[in-house]
Amino acid sequence: MAVGHSAARARGRTHATICSSVRGAPGMIAIVHVEIHPRATARRMPSDHRRPSPREENAVPDARAPSHAERCRTLAAQAKSATLSTIARDPFGFPYGSLVTLAVDGAGRPLLLLSELAEHTCNLQARTEASVLLTEPIGTHDQPLALGRVTILGLCAKVSAAERADARDAFLKQQPGASYYVEFEDFGFYRLEPTALRYIGGFGRMSWVSAEEYRAATPDPLAASASGILRHMNEDHADAVLAYAMVLAGIADATSASITAVDRYGFEIAAVTPKGPRAARLAFDATIATSDDVRRSMVDMAKRARQAPGSSP
Image (cartoon, rainbow, N blue to C red; front, side, top):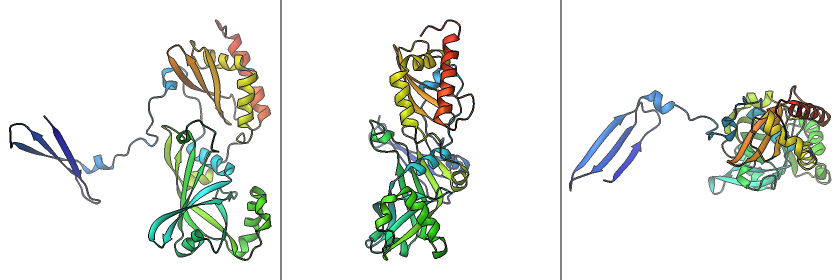
């Protein structure tokens, strides 16, 4: 028996109709109409579409982690280039993507220094709707789709003469290489005012972030030093990292472990066990502001792990 189905829905309708064709005896077709209540069609999937995580198998409660808004602000603060998408004039209405350098101001708004001769600038002068796609540096992960990224959507317009000096200072602080062309007559500063943001944190971590949440968040203070912290802990203190996994994260059968991410609230661990890979997140005792704070906290956590009853990593 073969079953085929199709669904029809139009915006504004109060129900949808599902038609199923069931083939039994030759020439026999049954049509089934199912009415769906409008509340059902409005129900949204979980914003992160997440799969069950290995972390959820552990008895350790989930530790505090950065919000998606905070992760977006951190990505924006680190970004040096972006894909700018504007609406093309010819051929009309198509998305037009281009590579640009950018900076962000104190509110996390992208600043662009664009030539008036560029196609994307001409597009913006016709229509201000635009977006920029920011990603973690290529090579941060083995799989490109594991990279954290954010698309910031909004209206992008030229900075006023009164604000140009502030925009110039902010841009050159983050893009010093632009100093040789910043005063060219055909270049001007444009600023994208966020309307909404779509955050993707790799596989199974995603959501929409409001402009208000984004403005209220702050970048992670450890972002610039995180890679050095990870390298130091994994290469020079592998025994301590294994103790974190076995004792503090409750992965008692871990045979090796590594720290894969660190931020102001804690860090994430990937462990190898006889049953396969496991993951966990551990929280710092207090919010961290500097790499020295990380060192002190991790030393304390290592002592606590090694002094726990029955611990022998």
